[in-house]
Structures are given as C-alpha cells and as structure tokens.
Image (tube, rainbow, N blue to C red; front, side, top):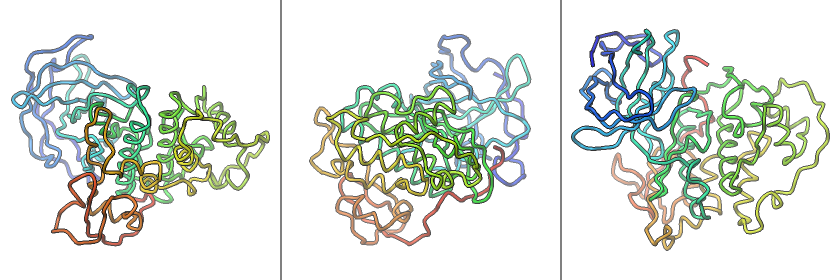
Length: 414
C-alpha cells in the first residue's frame, strides 16, 4: 500500500484545512467475496484529534454489508485483536462530508463509536473514498428481531430512544431510523445506532429535502412534502420499528410513496385538514376519501400488552408535535419492567446498564428523571461524573436547560 500526502478539507463549518492527511492507495480491501487475511497498514486520523495521524494495522477483512451508500467491511486490529467495522463511502468532491462532521461530534453509549478515519483512492479511477473505522457490533435488529420475546422488545426500544434523546438534544436528526441501522449485541441486548449518512443538523426556518428516510419508516409529513420538519420524524420512525418488533413485519409496507400514505391512512384514518396543516402548512390538496381510523387493538395479537399498544399509538400520531419525545418514550409504563431490579435477561443474566444517564442527558427533561431512573435523587455528584454507574440507581446534578427542538448548527449539503 502506498501513501500520498494530500490536503483534505476540514469537515466543520470552518474552511480552514486540516494538516496534510495521507491518502491510501493500492489494494487495501478484498476483491470479490473473499477474505483479505494479509496485514494492512493505513495512516488514519483519530476521532478526537483529526490533525494527529497514526498507523492503524488490521487484517482478516471481509464484506459484511453493502448498499447505495458504499460497502461495510469487518476486520480485526493487529495487536489488540479488537474487531472493527470499516465503512467505505464514495466522496463527492463538490461537498463537505456531513457524516464525518456529525460523527466526530457524537459521544454516547448507544451510538456506534468512530475510532479513526482515512481516505483512499479507487484502483481504477480517481474517485476518493472516506473510510470510517468504527467499533464492531455483530448483529442488527433487522436480522434478530424475529426472535424477540417481550423483554427483547423493551431493550432495543429504550436504547434507541435514549440515543435519539441525545441526538436531538445536540441538534442532530438521524433521518433514517430503521431496523437495519440498529446494531445490537444479541448476548446482552445492548443497541447502538449507526449510519449517519442521512443525518443533519436541523435549523428552524432552513428548508430540508422531504425525500429522506427509508419508505416503510417515513413519517407522513415527509410524504406530504414538508421541507420544514422537525426531529419528530425520527420519533415516527422509531414507532414503526417498535410496531414491527411487535408484529414481526413492517406495519406500513407501502410499495411507493403514495401507497405508503395509503397504508398509513388505512390504520390512522384520513387526516383532517388541521392535521395536514400541522404536517405541512404549505400543502393545499385536501381531496382524500374519508376512511375511519382502525382500532389499534385489532392491529396486534391479542397477547400484546395494552401498554405496548398505547405506546405505539402515542408515537404514530399525525401531528408531529403530538408525538412523545424520546425521553417520554423511555419513561412510558411499558418499559417499567426494565426498572425492576429483579428483572433478568433470558437465561438469568442481569440486565445491561441502561440508566447510567450523564448530567447532560438528565438536563434534557429533568421532570422525567424520577420516572426514568430507579432510585433517582438530586444529590450533586462530583464534577464530571455521570448520573450513576449501575442499572438500578443514579444520582445526578441537574442544570436546567431549554429543551431543544432540533435546532443546531448549519448543514453543508442536502
């Protein structure tokens, strides 16, 4: 592998270039469907100090996923033996890369961690690729969800909405919540949100593209063409994922954008003029057949807990402002079983930590803290500590902050 120095533009709002970042060339990934067992060395930037370049050595590279975004490889770091994922994405040189910009700003236990990043050229053309070296999580909710009993429906839900609470608090909308983007450790049930290729900092008043998010999980305001939507589109998507866990199949399996709306209307009923205006104030077509809302209890099996059905109904509201917030979702009674210290994983293992909220998280909706966290009290901890290190108790110093509604710094490209 050869290294050639190059200036890569800083992926922040500043136009100041980073220090020269080497670009890897040569055959550094396997071809076809094989495994590249040879040791590969690349010069990569660290996540915390992008101006600092280090040698990263890895081997046993194989393809584990691909799509329109690019290719994902699994590999193993030399020395530590740590498993990693490498996401390789073609770069459009006309734009800054928002995925890298956003991932460098995120730090949360339920968001996949960026370790390093580097650039490389295609062997055949002069295309530039960004490679994100990420922590490796072995499975996705999409692949293992059919095996879920009630408790395994609760675990991914609380982790997903805890991640969304953090994301929305820092101003980021994910815009592509779906089972394939929810990584999960099947042994512990710990979930991590991945794939920020569609994510964006939302700014009030700044238009956004409405053709975003995978179809089955797309919020109705997007189908109605809203360009001033809020972070609530992620809440809708999370609600559809939860419904899919309960049903074993997508709740709104539309064949097209229009058919997707038909599937939603068949269940929620025809939206009123007021509801359409809440979703998109600029929408002027109101010619829909009148269809009555379907009873939620008839959508799910008779064995589905009433609290689960209630939660779905409060996430899948036409009015974006009427949906639960992520932390309200985490505090919902359906998840109370996880707050019981006697609850165990199947096989008797203790539950993984899920209530170790940081002080920043506790400041988002502090009135919910006593519901969210077993044994919560307001005793100030030492500076810089989290709200608690175990599963069933927490203390935290809560500083009142304005609740964030999805506003943040500017995006760089739609």
